[in-house]
Image (tube, each protein chain N blue to C red):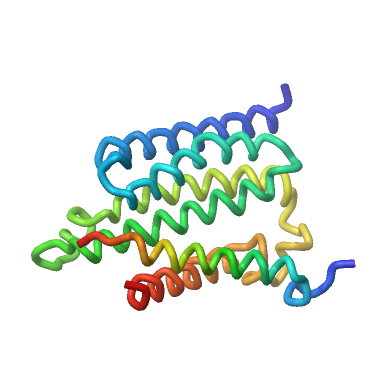
Length: 32
Length: 165
């Protein structure tokens, strides 16, 4: 059975890691 | 060899060549030894022409390849758009926005996405009636899902850029 995606811990872990990565990317990439 | 298998290899080959070309251009324009942030396109491009085309060739890793490829395209789109905003043309006209920004580079990058989507659809979404297509524009693996991720990744990137100095 496919559970609704928001009830899966893997979804939250993946998105927390991805958000942390994108925050860090925005932080390090400077073009000035 | 089946025609489908041949198409799969040709598409994966196309993905390999365009990614390799982009990677070499990046290395030539800004080698990672000059600045730590130049290692972002270096690593992203390296994954793009090695792991991603290889993963597209195996059914087990195909769905992962589709996601990784699309996310690399989104990251490239965000960072190159950022560069264009940081170095805008001196006068803003339709002509300069097209020819004096990284707009053509972003357009070339979209080819990577289209090749990846073609590889995915060839194997996973065999007909227009496939269940995952039906009425679920904003759900994986449809285009709305990519649109949501482009907007969300851009927003988080912008937050990191503005508030984490």
